[in-house]
Structure formats: C-alpha cells, structure tokens
Amino acid sequence: MRSEPVRIERIGAEGDGIGYVSDDRAASPVYIPLTLPGETVRARIVARRGDGWAGEAETILEASPARIEPPCPHFGVCGGCTLQHWRNAEYIECKTELLEAALRRAGYAEVTLRPSARTPPEARRRMDLALRRDRSGIVVGLHRLRGTEVVDLQTCVIAHPALRDLIGPLRAVLARASLLRREGSALVNLLDSGPDLLLRTDAAPSVSDRAMLAGFARAHGLPRISWARGNGPSETICVLRPALARFADMEVAPPPGAFLQASSEGERAIVDAVLDGLPEPRSGRSRIVELYAGCGTITFALAARGRVAAFEGDAASVAALRRTVNQAGLAGRITAEQRDLARQPLTAKELSGVSAVVLDPPHAGAAAQMPAIAAAKPARVIYVSCNPAVLARDAHNLREAGYELFAATPVDQFLWSARMEGVVVFSR
Image (cartoon, helix red, strand yellow):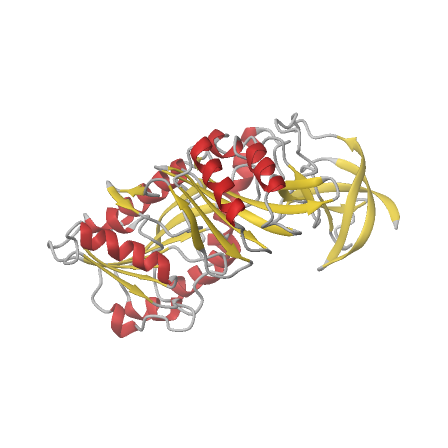
C-alpha cells in the first residue's frame, strides 16, 4: 500500500471522489470516499477497483470551499449517506448533471431539465435496517461505508421522526426476544396509518416474542408487524388496525415490505411529472399502459386521464391493487395483471394503439421491454428512472425509434446519496 497526493475531479456513481495521482490523466483513476471535486488529498491506495484503484484519504491537503460540516454524527462511518459534507448548490448541480449526462449518452444533444424536486431532511418514509446480535447485544443500523459491519445507529437525519424514533425501542425489544439469533433485517414503511414493520430473522418468533412485539406495536403506534424467516414469505404477527397507504384519494393495503417511493414529497413530484407528460386525450377512451405498477402509486392518478392497464410482477402488490380497484368500483377503468416483465415483456401488438406507456422499472431497468415499446410507437413514453446509467441504455432504444425528448424532471429522493431519480417524457 502506498500513499500518494490525488487531485479529485468529479463525483462517481457511488458517491466517491474520482481523481488522479499528480494530475496524471493518463493514469488509472483513484476512487476515494468522502472527498469533493477540486480537493487535493493524500490518499492511501489500498486495492484494485474496476478500471482503477480504491483509495482512502489520509489528509486533506487542499479542501474544497464547498465542504461543509455534515449534520449527522454517523457520517463518514455509516454508508447510508455519502455527500452530507457538500454545500447544497454544488450538490444539487452534481445530482442534476447525472440525469442530463444519461440523456446525452442516449443520443439527445439538447437536454433542458425542469427544476429539481428535492426531499428535505427528516422526510424519508422507508427504513431498511440491518440487525445483528453479538457479544455486546443487539446492533440496529446500516452497513459501514464500503464495508459489511453494521453501524449501530443512534439517530438518522434523513429518516422521518416517526421511523427514527423506533430505532432505540426496536433494539430494546429485540434484545429480549429469541427470534434473532445472529442476523436479520427490519424494513419499516411509514404508511398513512403508521409505521408498518416487517422483520426478517433467522429464528421463528416464540409465543413470548409475539406478545412482546404486539406490545411494541401498541406502545409505538404501529398498525401491523409481520415476520419472515430470511427471504421467505411473510406472516402476520399482529394487526392493531388496517395498514393503509393513500394514493390519489384511494386507500390501498400494501403487503408487508411493499415498494413505496422513498418520501411523500418524492412521490408527489413523480406523479405530477408523469401526469404533466401525458398527451392531451383525444377522447374519453384514451388507453394508458403502466408497467411495474407496484400496488398503485401512480395507477389511480393515471385513471383520471384514461383507461389504465397496469402490469406488475409481484403477486402481493397486484392483489392489493386489484382489491382497491374492485372496492372502489373502478374495474372498468383499471385492470391489474401479474406479469414478470423481464421474462415475459408485453409485445408490440399488446401495446398497439395505446396513447402512453408509463414505466417505473427497478434499478436494473427495462431492457427486455424497451424494443416492444419502441416498435409499438405510442405517442408518449414516460420513464421513471432511479438509475441514470440504465436510463441511458433504455432511452437509446427510444432515440433510435425516433422519439424526441419532451421533458425531464430531476427528483432528488435519495437525499445526500449519489442516487438520482428522474421522470423523463419521450414524444413522437
């Protein structure tokens, strides 16, 4: 391991500073966490990493004027946030450039972004915590930056207070329970009816565990607690009241651990941008296809603008969506179908004649689905992306099929991370 001065030039896809030894651009890049563009640091080169080297900053020789004091006491150790030390203006500029660069890589020379929508601190409504039992007791937290060790959290400045305030009590109740022998996870979604907890552990809950968890739910306002062994199916531990989320004035009962947008602010920004991107209906019979619909985050808002055919791979999410559709008498307006879109994408024939396709794919994108969308040539394709690198790949298909860039809205839903969401509207 050697120590070298490194000049940081930019922030990479994982939030690391990327620089070169002695400004030698011909050299391999060095990836150094917790550094900022414009800084010179003395770094210890520790290992190969992809096309370059992984490094650790030993000393900041020249600090960026945009470096600020991070608000969280866990910053630098916890891997949940990587950019809290960056001044807001530069941080926002970097995040929006991720979306702009992705669209340029897709072949769009002229990219004009709409103003960025940002989630504030203490607003994240989804918390996925690692759990471990060791000699010191129960550890509840997130993994160490670039490591596997779990950092025991005492606070979190991005989590909604209703979730943050559960960390300590959850640690206490798990210390008395037998369902966690060595490791597990706790996923909490803040629904409109309260925090919905799914525990995944390596041992089954005893009768005593179930009683303690029911008491925990009553004491801290949880509508439901569910449990699963590892990655297996979940079962209900207790239900004190319905676990409900509201989407466009419709109450949906999401399954335990359901995918929801990370914040209500982010969800509103995404839904508004999607609706704004829809074509003007030519008649009351406009058809919209929604792919990766989840349990209805965007579906019910879309139904106000046309008939919606919603497709989703997760059976429990489809069941929740169908249940609300039927209860609300919307079966003639919304259809919901379970379909694995990676293995069985919709065909161009199935997409023929629709006015818009709206898709919110997972982090890996929609590679299997894009050729059929491009071939079907709907008037609008509205792509909700959480991965700019994959967006560039998928958008290239649309560019080759003659689609123009109609609108692009950055959504900073993953505060102080290198992840960026965007709603991109493509038009023919």
